[in-house]
Length: 140
Image (tube, rainbow, N blue to C red; front, side, top):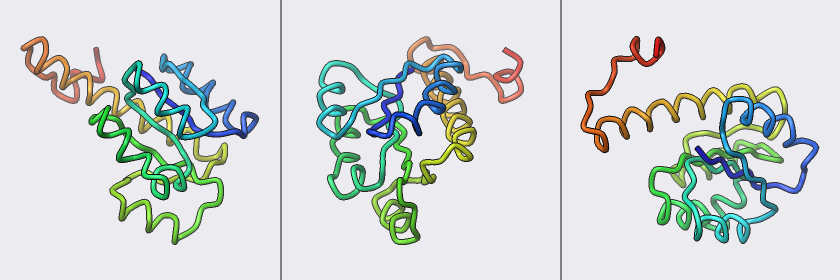
């Protein structure tokens, strides 16, 4: 599954890239919304991690969801604030984290959980096989 991370602060993002790659995600780092839009014209994504300015102010979230409707959008706020979180929630974004190392494990956990959910849907609807119970998903 593909994850796009928007950001120029490669030193800050590098540990998150490593954690996601270790969990078998394909990670693409782009510098701005133009990079995201250019990528999704060619391939779909399942996750987009970006600052709230990109997702809310530049309406990147709407553009991404129009091409990749099942994508999970996660805010990694370079300057977290209550106002920023409020705007993100108002725009329909459920995940809001400061762009700091201490929060990266939680971001990875969300991506892993979402991947499992998407795989259950794929199995059910594309392969016409029953969805495994939560216990079965953990075992297998």
